[in-house]
Length: 130
Image 1 (tube, rainbow, N blue to C red):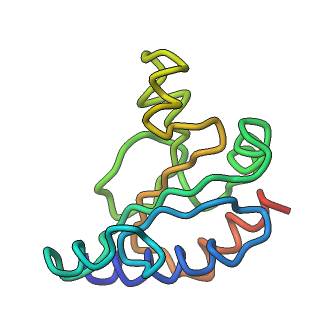
Image 2: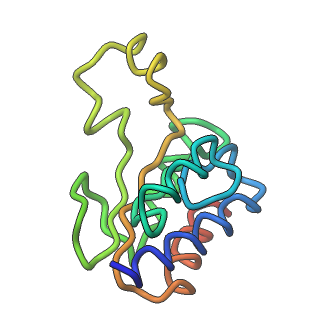
């Protein structure tokens, strides 16, 4: 868990700087609105990073179509990094209005970070964002 959390933080920092990314959600980042609270309650930011790609669903699908290392699945809590598109998987059964109200936009992607090397994860994501 320590390795996954450390990799998640570095991945979140990298995503925050990427020009194709609109927003990153990770409580380990100082930019997260509840960062101070999270760091009081837990030892790290955890192993799940969410982010919004610029370009909505089309950009999200492009990213997914180019993955070679990261698995496409709604599963979390594995040693293998997985990625999901909440609007079409975990939240697909709720209305578009309810999804929007909850912040589940078409460009939102959720990554459950596993034990792969950070450079491999960044390269996999960068390929789909190019």
